[in-house]
Length: 418
Image 1 (tube, rainbow, N blue to C red):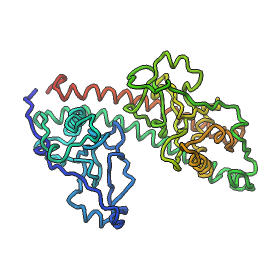
Image 2: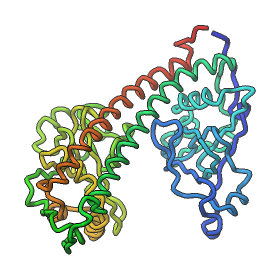
Image 3: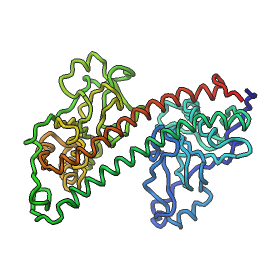
Image 4: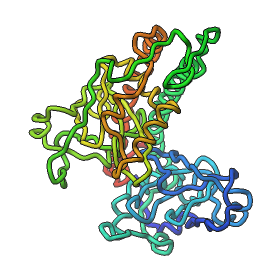
């Protein structure tokens, strides 16, 4: 192993702090280039951000000195997201909460630098004053943070191990995206466009025009369990272990779970819970919370050990279980149809604390599980859901292995032989 040499961040490449265009100049916004903020980052993924906003050609021209080329390293340097790191696969501009490094290829391998910065999460937060009201590392301080790196050949060897793990993780994510898109596309084809019933008479119903042969039922008329969980009075405090307690913050779609935001209840408390226990494959619904007058429902399904084999929900989450895994999955998409979602959005926005209640769910109309096409949909797509959940457990295993290996490689505890 070669001797590692100390460098300041500013010597490893060009540091650029982003900038947000003025809200008073709408011409800066358009579809020319992604505009990235810390809220766009996705946890534990190297090339993962989902920028909703884009700049126009005028905006890009105005901020041309802030453009980041492909495979720059973007580091959040203010607020609660301090220390999060991603790389970009296309040119982007960021806001001022992000300091980015365009790596000097003569000194540092881009992948190595990414993993080095990931390994320095606690260091970055320390420099930012972790625990203060608004932790921050400005550009000057960021450029002066020091780190040790080996020679370029050793950098590439170290990075290649971590890259291979992340490539496997990304492959599993891509498989999940494909399977979810297939499930959604088939749902839309059969239950929105009614492609299998195109020659059948359409009749007016509570959910719009549907084929005459389709049977509708209120949820309250279908055998099911609908319940919330709970947490101890006074909350869970700083409890760091025990039984995972799933809150609204982790109801964000299939295969999505932020382990950094989870909370726990004691195992003793969980054992005494009479409701809110997750067995797997139930439809979980974001129940309440948020800005007054504004409510957007969210959904997920857990199972096959993802995110855990045993877990409970709190009082801000509904568990809806029809006793049929395939119909629970059907309901996951049905709840997101325009009419059903609009009903829940309207009902949720009425409350003083935005949210929906059991009656809002029970009174919804849904295609009955007795419909032959609904059963056929379940037979086809349930294996997709099972594969998605299995892939999630594999992603978690690989992520934990990578996160365990990362500090050992970066400290020299684990060395790479020639």
